[in-house]
Image 1 (cartoon, helix red, strand yellow):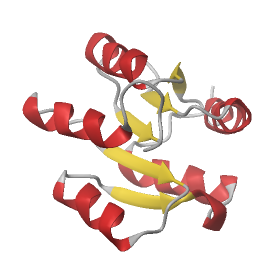
Image 2 (cartoon, rainbow, N blue to C red; image 1 turned 60 degrees about the vertical axis):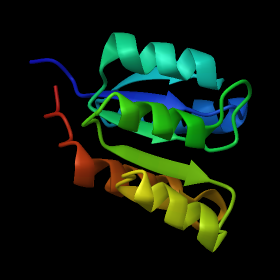
Image 3 (cartoon, helix red, strand yellow; image 1 turned 180 degrees about the vertical axis):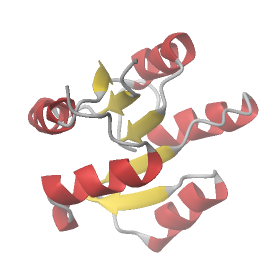
Length: 126
C-alpha cells in the first residue's frame, strides 16, 4: 500500500521542517517546495493527495497557485496555512476552493495533524 502524499508548500525553512517531521511521523509521504514555481511543478508531476499551501511565497504567490489549480480543474484538496487572518484573504481562498484556512499563529502541530487527517486518511501503522 502506498502512503498518501502531501505537497508541503512553505517558504519558512523552520516551519517546513516542523511540518515535515510531524506529518512524516504520521506516515504520510511529504514532497516539499519552498517557492511558487517549484510548487506548481511539484503538484503537476506528483499529483499529491493533499496540498498544504502557504500564501506568501517567492516567485508565484499561493493565490496564483490556487488560480492555476482552478484553471487545471484540479480536484486535489488544498489547506492554506498562512500568517494572515484577513477576512478578504480567507474569502478569496474560499472562492478558489480551499478546503480549510489555517492561521499559523493560532494552530499547533497536533491541530495540523487533525486537519490533515480530516482530508486524507492517516496511513495504517507499519
